[in-house]
Structures are given as C-alpha cells and as structure tokens.
Image 1 (cartoon, helix red, strand yellow):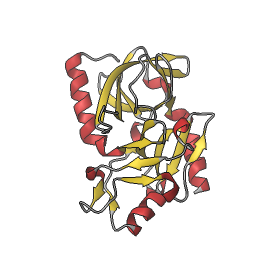
Image 2 (cartoon, one colour):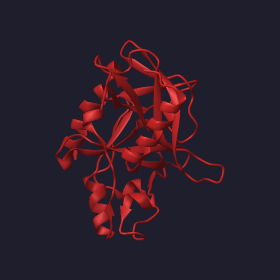
Image 3 (cartoon, one colour):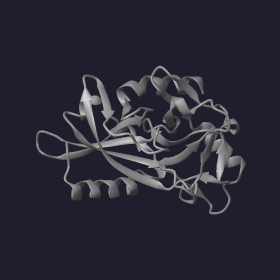
Image 4 (cartoon, helix red, strand yellow):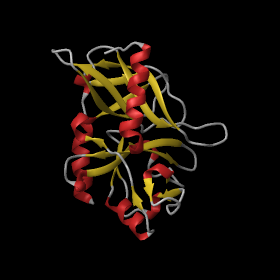
Length: 227
C-alpha cells in the first residue's frame, strides 16, 4: 500500500527503533553493501546474517561494527574480516542471496571478550510477493556511503511493484544499499496495518529486484545444515 509522506516518515522512524541494530555495513575491496541479522525462529540456532550474493567472495570482505551493536563498550574492533568467521558464508548466486549462520560470529566475539547486541529481523514479519498487491511504499534500511567514507544508517523511502511472483524497487538506490532489507506495510481486510520484511535488495540498473523471503527460506535451511 502507498502511504502519505507523514505516515512514511513515522514508519521509517519506527523501523530504526525496532530493527536498527539488525543492520550492518559490509564492504569488499571494490564494493559497498549492507547485511542484516535475521532470526528464523525461537531457536537461537536459526539466527543468520543475510546479504546479496554478489558481495560475497570478493577480496577484502569485511563486516563493519557500530558501537550500538556490541557490548561492553570499547572492546569490539571496528570491523570483522570475512576470513575470520568460521563457518563462513553460504553463497546461493542463483537466488542472489548469501547466508551466514551466526554461530561463528558469536564465537569470534566471545574469543575477543565482547558480545553482539543486535535486533534481528524476526521470522514473523518475513513475507513473499503476496505482501505487495499494487505499487507500495518501500522502506530500505541500509548503510549508505558518504563522501568522507563514513557509513551511516539510513532509510530510503521508495516504491516497490509486483510483476507476477517478482518484486522490484522502481528506483536505483545509492551505493551501499545492495543486500539491505526491504520493508512494506499492508492492511488486512479489517483495516489493520502490519509491517512486513520482503527480503533484500539485489543489484540492478534503473531499479532493483528484491529477493523475497518465500525464496530465501530454503537457502536458510540449507546454510544451517552446512554450519
């Protein structure tokens, strides 16, 4: 559903409060992107980090850390190199998705004397293309890239459209947004409005395909089986 500008601003603010600490900057030697924590169920084993497959495997991959996602203060490093996490990413290029079960991330943190303090996107709001009936307001939480190289948490408010079983963001997003989660709101027949996470941003020109959770679900199970 399309929202008016005031409602869009309210949703963007709420998203930052509820899942802002799920979002982390990711980069390689030649590209910037975003990754996010997803909780696949009540079992902590179901937690995973998700991003776009195109970002994984390139040299120099590292996950940036914000002070708000770790504790105690001042102990965690500024970034975690891709090669320091075992087991590493499971890459599913056919779906455009990469999955990292977070057991290795938690072990790495414990070895360094710190802990993760994150807000994973919960499985209860994961959705497929059915969450987009027509053109809808879309909210993309990402770490953009400023001219000075800083990576602030941002919200881009765009539009998504559905074409059969595919969902697409109609505008090309700035650098750093590939891999970021995409959220929409939807009203049920009673008029109650609910928030949904469609999936993640894939690379595109003039717009972006969205890898929706109906397609991601099978790869989550496969990645945890390999962990």
